[in-house]
Amino acid sequence: MPGAPNRPPEFADSTPPPGPVSESPREKALRRLAPSRIALRLDLWKGAPPPDLLVPFEKAEATFALGDYAGAANALDLLSVRFAEPRWPTLPEPFRRLRVPIPAPMPPSWDPEHAMSPAEREARRARRSADEQVELARASVAWAAAAHLETGDLAVLLDEAAGLLASEGVSGPFYERIDRIWSALRERVPPPKSATGPRATSPPAAVAELEDA
Image 1 (cartoon, rainbow, N blue to C red):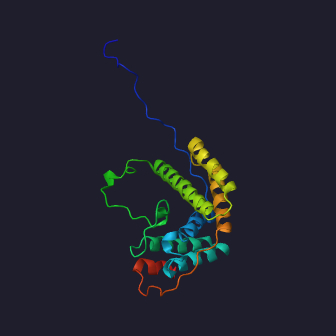
Image 2 (cartoon, rainbow, N blue to C red):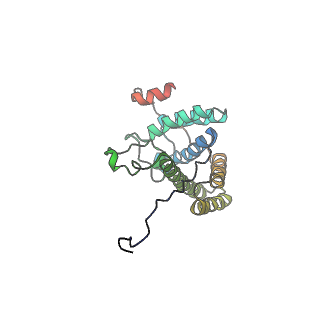
Image 3 (cartoon, rainbow, N blue to C red):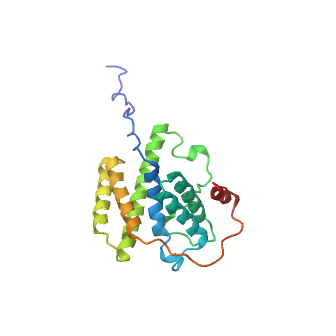
């Protein structure tokens, strides 16, 4: 038929992205608290992290144990700011993800999320967070194994979580396994030791605000 198109018109995929997985304040805090415990026991601290890092971590642990998950999140925010300060050794990957994010300046049009719908942006960020959780869990389990802690059951959970993420995407069963890993590591890994030395007397203004929260 004259003027007919060579192929049928293409329609945009109308399938909505998967909805976000429900996360409690406790789960959100645990997924930062447990890997922070491992990060503060890395060899780069030469046996003990400095007090400026240890104090917010201990506050996060104490408030978490009391069920004050908002307080734990605030203390972890302070720790993430501390981790990013240039006066400390640089955390190796993937523990570097525990630092406060400092995105490079760019025009909005360069941001790959700029043209996405809110649901698409949320789904993309949820997947990125899940990928980071797998990498953090893998590195943490490897550290615990090298420290001669029991990790056989955690390796199984990690394989299951990675498989679920690859086959189903971000889901409740995926995070159920990830959270079991973090709960076990928090119980099995001793807290970091305290280092001697004076605390900083003049923290940056943003850090002081977090400390007062």
